[in-house]
Structure formats: structure tokens, C-alpha cells
Image (cartoon, rainbow, N blue to C red):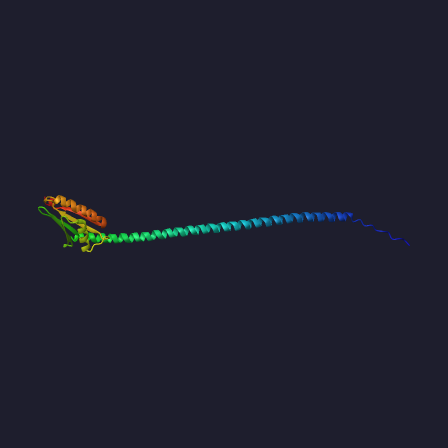
Length: 205
């Protein structure tokens, strides 16, 4: 009877192949892990950058909103002042127009200087009505103020006044000077009072 032959298997080469495959897998796995880590870090940096940009944008929007509110407040205040100015201008223009119409109809204030040998006085008229008389020696400014009050004028009214005198009459020079000074003084109390001077002597000669 023949004795069976022994079969000897040599796995050395196969083991080498397996080790090579395993080594290749480990290297590739490590490289893939590094790639995944780098991509994750890159995405994280992008997310952080987006978040920081979003915060910066929000801060910028808040600054712009605050600047807009401040500018809007300034516009509102300027608009309110302009409305008041226009209203005041319109009211002043209306009063000035009314005064000019009264002047055209000879209804403005007229002050007549009447002189005598050693005295003088002024008669003050409004709409051809006597509203006051001031004699030499009296306080002319106070007399003018009282006459304007009697006529119903206020310090906000536009008043056109005509001072009529005869420069050739005796004693008219000093009286003219006193009345003119009084008109200058009363103009400080009535800032919209405007007066003219009419010398009848120059008109008639």
C-alpha cells in the first residue's frame, strides 16, 4: 500500500500581498481622512466668516438706521421751521399789503406839524380821524405811542406814517428835529412802522 504524499502549502507570498493591500488601504484611508478634515475645517472657516460678515452687516445696518433717524429728525425740524417761517412771512406780507392799501386810500397815519409864533404842536390822524395831539414840551414818543394804541395798532402791525411839515414856518426846524427823533424812538417799539417826511414848502415852491 502506497503511503500518501504530504502537501506543503506556502502562504508567504499571499501574506505579502495581503500586507501590501492593507498598507495601501491604510495610506488611502489616512489621506481621505486628512482631506475630509481639511474640507470640514474649510467649511467651518467659511461658516465663521459668513457669521462674522453677517454680524458686520447687521452692525452696518444699525449704523445706517441710526444715521437715517438722525437725518430724518433734522429734516423734520427744518421742515417745521420752514413752515413757521412761511406762515410768518405770509402773515407779514398780508399785513404789509393791507398797510399799503390803506396808504393808497389815504388811510395811513398822518402827523401834521402846526407851528405858531412861539409854540407848536402835532395832530395825529388815522383814516382821517384825529387820534392824538402832542404839544411842545410834552413827551412826543409817549404821545405817539398813545395815539397808535388809540387807533388799535399793535407792535406786530405794519404801519405807514407820513410826517407833514412846512420847513419855512417859524420854529419848524427845532420842532421837526424833535418829532423826527420821537419817530425814530417809537420805531424801536413798533419795528414795522415806516415813516416818510413831506415838506409842503418844497412841494408848493
